[in-house]
Length: 276
Image (tube, rainbow, N blue to C red; front, side, top):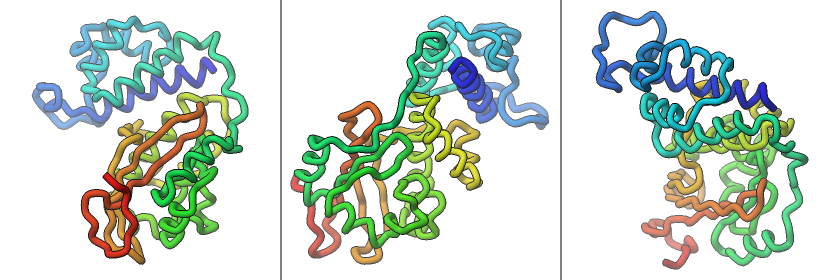
């Protein structure tokens, strides 16, 4: 647990520093740099800490940064609210490294109550995702809507992230595919941080890392708000459709996803809409 949390925290610092350019923080660009991003000394100066201390954090030799240091680093690295939240969780993991309980086995059985919820949402497409974005359950509307997209094909492995990155139809289906890819990567990053000892999460990430697009996003610690987003897709039967995605977390390791289809623009006759 200690090694994983420390590595995540250190990797995040390094990745975010590499993505910042001098002009992003009001510094002159100067000569061409041998490595991308800001120098360690530059971030340290912006945060008001020593370069040696920042080096210890990035190398995992210091695991007890103060709240003030974390806030200063978050500002220096120009983190947004989603990134700050993740950064804080990583820091909290460092503090709890000796007392954090094991994540335990992921629950793949959906309770009767949660099943009743997604059934009651019919005809609104709704489904349940597990820790590693595996599809655990769904209502008929979700299957009817997504089966023509290939989401239930064998190569999708009943996993939303694997579908997004590895299914040949995904890039044509999602008109804003980069946003959806960032969303899936962020959700897996949150799962890996929350359940660092779960081999199933690690196994999914390892499988996806063979895909260059996922590997790049993962290496950069790409983060976005994956709980309330808009997805635009080209449906083979219904044409261009806009889906507002809303998320509920009724259980620790299961998530209910609700797809509100074309709520604002009923472009396709016969499409069953959610009432305002």
